[in-house]
Length: 255
Image 1: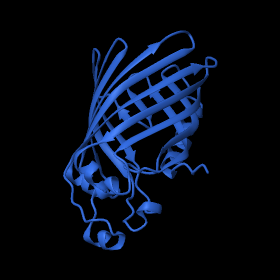
Image 2: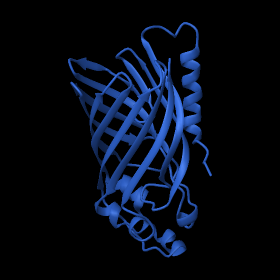
Image 3: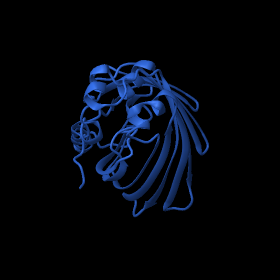
Image 4: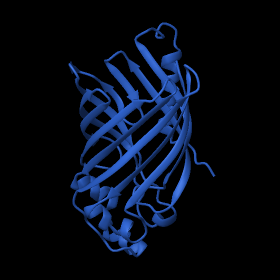
């Protein structure tokens, strides 16, 4: 059964629809596409159970100054020099429910994050490095996210992208996600665990077909690997899986 979209993204969707449909804002500087689709993805990071989720797609930009999408958050290109951009941004990290395999562990509330991203574009390739840290929710610490993406247009209708990514999570971040307290251990039967930081690496790709100047369909897929103390956590090694994958199909409309 399809699960409900998380409330923060419902709010983001409603807000974006209001912005792009407000008279006076629809000018040549604005570029926006909205849509929705389904993702087949793990229940939580480290899970070996998968579920189908309804998920929105939102991409809004104002010239070369501001951008908003679910992947990168809301950012401001503060510094632009040639192919380089430096942008502070805010975003959101999802939490983790304590049901099924995790019913005897504590629930983790998602929260807002703030960060700084540097990006470089050259021909078909784009590269980015970001540092981000939560300021609400149950996760502390920071993450460093490195990405590279190749994008190519094969014809007037077909586009493809592919690229690797690497994420490092700090000790506090890893402990909040994969640690098990003595109390949780007593309730769940899993061994207590206090991890240090870890790295996650992966590969993502997408294929887009333009149905018209406005409508397009995109298929996407990705795989990532938990390493180090995250992989060794009982949450992963005993009841989950270190290799994580997802796939999805989306339809979007460009304004």
